[in-house]
Image (tube, rainbow over all chains, first blue to last red; front, top):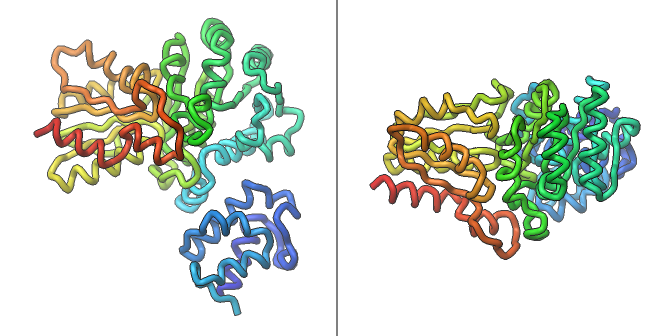
Length: 81
Length: 321
């Protein structure tokens, strides 16, 4: 799987949503992405990419797009093509 | 509630309060008699989703813990199974007489859940620490006290408490990224301790957040040639005295480790029992010292309390040599 597919899978499995709902999705846009859902997503991404996210980045992770931007940082080195 | 490795990892990340909320959500879906109650700490209790999904079975009494216990008692009298949660000192000492009368004397089938027990409330300070709750709750006849070692066991404790006929106090310790003791759901029986390791030199009897620390201490002791057993005493009342009978004869030293004051908790419970024995190993008790400490973050507070692997290993080694 590509990194993008892994990323999407984490969102889809955590929030039980279809792939077509991911683009433009923001924190609290859906019931499942509340504070508990947020940490569950973080845990899923950390597990999927074998990383440990910094607290500031967890807080900044406000949308599907922002998440990709954060994970692409040198700290985590996840490349999305 | 069964769980697997992946869930254990996710729950560890979430921490005890969020996992309590998740467990309650699933429980309330399966059992229509279960209620969740709070004294204006619903979100802090991890009950946000419960509040949304089951507004008719979530009750907020406001910051009125005595009323919280009273309302819970009324529900229990009507055959419901109420779970009332708040921070440890507020759900025990602030409403002590209501706990004593309703949970104790009336032996009602109600459950209370203490969040942030021990020193995990960190910078909120001594008003919010739960270092005396066990000393009080242990003194209530008929009380059952559960102290889960990690987030996975927490879910088992919630379910087991639902099935247990009588008052139950569940004490939650730790914070997000709580170390995992149980990677998968295993045996969980109220009143029956889990022997995680056996060791002929010393037995570390721990509860709650300190079980993971005890395992780490056992690993370090092994590198020093000391064989350490580890017991997860997840039920503090009734205490698994059968387990203590087994280990007392085997170990040269008994050690208790708890994120609670040294007075009245796990150490005291074990000491009260082994004191009756004709032959017993010496007992070392680790816990929060008998004084008010300056507040700081969680790891600072544990360090100030001597609840670190380094300190425990050092003291145990000194005692054994």
